[in-house]
Length: 119
Image (cartoon, rainbow, N blue to C red; front, side, top):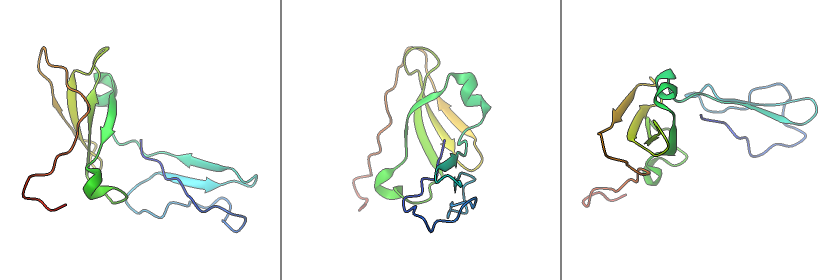
């Protein structure tokens, strides 16, 4: 799930107005009359993920995309008690690619840049 978390809320922040400045997500946040902030999320996956048992340890390439728009996230799929797959999800189309092999139990994905990349 993707949330929008507004950081600069004060008495001048408009009430009952979506505070989401990002055009590429349907997540939102709204200040209510009593001063509370209500957040609504955008689901970044389709129903297939729930049928597979869910996903933990979601990752993006933080060194390149932290605080920026990104197209994919990766994580470990949990078909049972331990991780049994790696999942790549397109955040726009919600399409998933799954790697899974009998007898293999992957862990949290970690990004390693190619040796010739300067990032």
